[in-house]
Amino acid sequence: DFGRTADALGLKVFAVGGFVRDLLLDEPNLDLDIVVEGDGIAFAEAFARDHECRVRSHEKFGTAVIVFPDDFKVDVASTRVEYYLEPAALPTVETASLKLDLYRRDFTINTLAIVLNHGSFGELLDFFGGLRDLREKAIRVLHNLSFVEDPTRVFRAVRFEQRLGFDIGKQTEHLIRSAVRMGFLDRIGGPRLLNEIIHILEEVRPFPAMARLEELDLVKFLHPALKIGEETGAVFERATRALHWYELLYTGKPCSEWVVYFLCLIRDLDADAFQGICERLGIPGRLHPLFTEQRHLAQGVLQRFQAFARRKMKRPRNSEIYQWLLPLDTEVLLYLMARLESEEARSWISVFVTRLRDQKPLLSGEDLKVLGVPPGPLYREILEQLLLRRLDGEVVTREQEIDLVQ
Ligand code: CTP
Image (cartoon, rainbow, N blue to C red; front, side, top):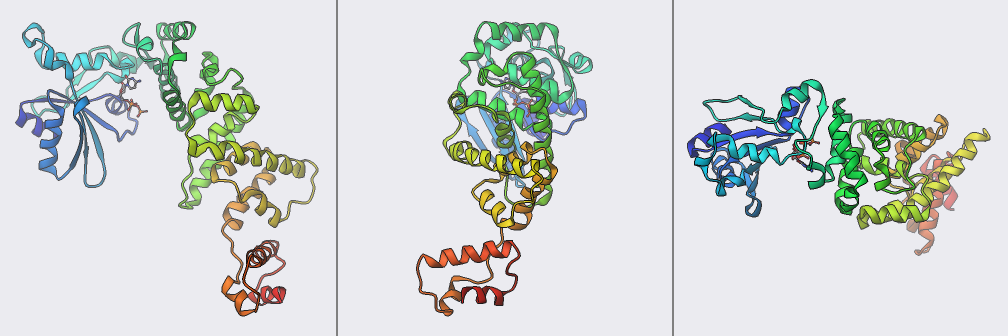
C-alpha cells in the first residue's frame, strides 16, 4: 500500500537498510525503514489519511514516523539531496537521490533497497555491492572515510559481524585500526558511546562481540583498566542463563538486560576506575544508586554467599537471605547469580525472587490495634519480626502470629 500512495503522489518509495538486509538473510526484523524520493512527510501524511494511522513528523530532518493502530511503526525519510540537485545532470533521475542517500550509510550490507511502487514492486537495487557482501558474509564500509565521519560505526561493525556470523573485511579492519591509532574514537561523546555499548549488550549473545572488541583493542575506550578475558565469558554465560530464567518467570517486573551485563563487565573495577567509566559514558543519574550503593551491597552479599558455599556451611536462614537481598533491584540480583559459581548459592537467590521477596506477615496493623498494641513505630518492628519468623518457618498460622504478639 505504500506503493499505491507513492504512485498517487508521483513519488518513488523504497524499503531500505536493516529491513532489506534481514529479509535477504531470512532473519526476523520488524523495523521497517522507508525512503521517499521527494517529500517524505507529505507521503507519510497522505498514507496515514488513507489508513487510519497517526504521523509524527520532524520537519527539520524531513523524516516522519507512521504509527499504525496496533502501534506498529514505520520510519520514513526523505532523500534531501533531491531539492538541490539538477535532475537533468544526472544519468538516472529516479534513483540518483536514493543512491546518494544510501552512500551516506555505514556498511554495504545496509545499502540495499527494494522498490515499493507498483510498476516495479520488489525490484532490488544494489548500488554498492551489498548483495555480494551478503553472500561473502563480509562487513565492508563504502569508502575510506566512513569511520572518520562517524567513529561509532567501529562498534556497529563488530556488533553486526558477531550477530550475523560475518567477518569484517580486510580493508575495513585496517580502517578500524587506523581510526583507533589516529584517536578518532576519543571523539565519541559519552551518551553515543554508551548507546553503542547498550546495543552490544542487548544482543542475543553479547560476549563474542565484547571479546572481538578486546581483540581489536577497542575496550580501552570504555576504560583502560577494563579487560575482557575468559572469566568474563563464564560470567556472561551465567548472566544469560539467569536472564532467561527470570524471563520465564513472567513476574511482570521488567529487567534491563544491558544493566546486568554491564555490572558483569565492570565487576573488578576499583572505585576510581568505576567513577572514570561512569563519567566517560555519562551514565544517567537514575542508575547511580544501582551502580554505587547497590553494587557495594552486592559485593558484601557475594562474599558471604561464597563463604557459605566454600565452607559447606549450612545454608543461610531464609530471614538472612531476605534481609541481605531485599535492598537489591532485580538487575543486581541477576548479576549476583552470574557471579556465583556454586549452583547451590545461586538457588538461594532464586528462592528469594520466587518465594521470599513478596511475602507479607498474616497480621496487619489493624490486627495489632485490635490486639491492644499501642500505635507507633513498634508496629513496623513487630510486623517485620513476624515476617522474618514466617520466612524461617517458625510461625505458620495466624494464631501463631497472634500468640507471638501477645
Ligand atoms: N546508520 C549509519 N551510521 C550509523 C547508524 C546508522 O549509516 N552510525 C545507517 C545504517 O545503514 C542503518 C540505518 O542507518 O541501516 C538505520 O540504523 P539502525 O536502525 O541503527 O540500523 P539497523 O541496520 O536497522 O540495525 P538493527 O538491526 O540493530 O536495528
